[in-house]
Image (tube, rainbow, N blue to C red):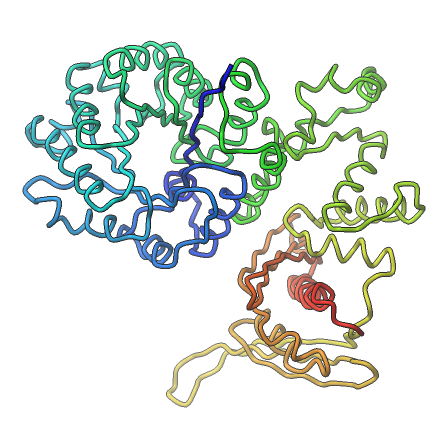
Length: 532
């Protein structure tokens, strides 16, 4: 039986950005968009051009997506203006997006109370706005806000709203459970009725998680006839969040009846990266991943020592509903390093390191990794540091330079105009191929000053670092108190578009930062084949 195509729409960068405490930078959005694209999603909604400086800047230089359709979000035109003369809609229409998803109200109560316009006028606004998108040769999608509540209150009006969008050329009619209160059985019933009345329309579902059932609502809607599912990484979103793609996608690809009936743009290889992408988002947000999250959590396949450990080793499927490697996770049995060794071999292979699993150096490296992770190192988001750690254990990384000492000073003083300013100066003493170098650099803060000093003069290696730049810097406090342990994550890039992340851990934030900076430089030199 031929499988039906199911389309996946990610709204992490727009709806997920409404999460309390989440504030994406342009660089954050770029990283997440590329990660989503690598999974194989069909649509990546980048935000609302014109709504804020970050989204506007993000759309001014669109990310180089290879598969996903770059999508802009906006509202239907305001009453009293034509679609051509609405400034807010114009910003969306003028964006670099291939698809445009417009939201409009489909609940008569909201039209009466929030918009305070005639109901027919709202329907006309929807139609004219969708027509404007189609006229620009962009794919128009319509988000029917408050659809389920609107349908319960006045099904004829809710249907009239989405019918207007459909007749105007909307490629998808997305039914939104805006307040998250719809239960799976209601979603199934209502979607079934809508599908029967609009059989030619392509329907989507946008569920919020206020009853902890957004994934279940999405699956119920799928069974009733929707063929597009919207959601976010890790269920990010306002209030209680949105449907979590990190559990939805594995359910669709690994569980019956979905895996037999439907296919998505996510490949098996893409699915195996979903744990990595989930944790990348948490690293970008500078927060600890939910270790108990389904499929991608660190404890999702952890089996504590006890009566069933031997059964897990002999027959993992007894206690695991899917193989952990299918979603890029790993089995953990704390009383044994058996799964730890296999996971390490996978990571070595991913780094291009070919070594026999029985090599004694693998055991030593495994113990080193365990000890360092106990101290606070995290290598899920710092692949470059992990590769260096492994290659150092195998004697493959040259001693490009030796840092003899470093220091940094921060001074606040008045400048010539009598203004209080803060200046940072870093000093690094290096030994490069027998030559002793004394570097001094200034910067915007102590870390920037140390980075400038470290790279100011690296002798014969300086030319290889001319295009190296630090593009992101994040700090996490791992323990409380005045002697807190700090983890620093640094992301670097070069002129060829390569990016890599490194990590440093110390009770001293400057020391942790310097470790991550040094690893970044060494990784670039090694990756580029520079000889010591």
